[in-house]
Image (tube, rainbow, N blue to C red; front, top):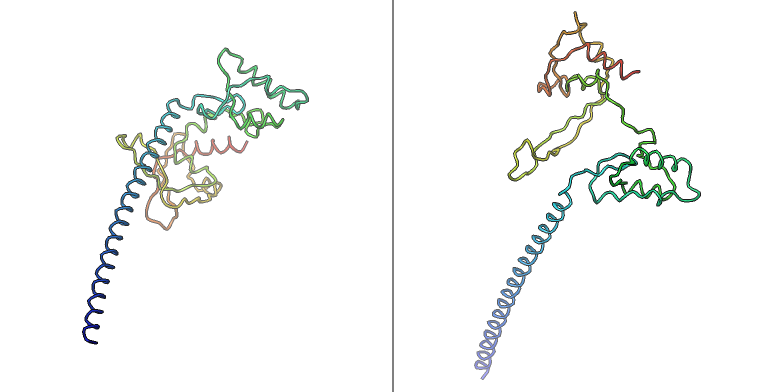
Length: 246
């Protein structure tokens, strides 16, 4: 009697265990299928978002930065500027400095073409504040002297107060050649201070103004690697320094 009860118990337990295992495996299959569906939906969603953002970006850059702000003279894209309407900024009680700024810009750009102003300058002028980057804020770019124009890259490095060292690589550009692709920096950026006076005094005195000297630029003197090597004219370097110190 007892033996038959034990056998019945073991049989029922085995059947229950098998059913539980079947339910567990079935539940795992359903969860796996659901996770695969969700993963596929997520991939499609991100793919559609990428395509949408790419189309949006291409739509924005259809026109180049051809819109010049009459306040700061920056060349900007269309979504960064708004049409310039003089009456919008010429209000009662406006500061004389801003009124003069508006008048000068309007007179200098009084052609029949549509005038534009960037959003930053517009917001500042509406608050009766002179934009920090306005041209009339003594930020007009002056012409580069001829003594500085004729310097090559290495000669410019010799008169620079700080020399930035960085590794520039070509970014992924698809079918574009490496010459036309966008560039990016990789790794740390080192900004090395340079003693211009010591550098110039160590340059040899040229016999004539056309004398050229071969020069090697390194990040540190103890390094074997040469960062840049070029012929320089010590006379041009000294003339450029005289212009900069005036």
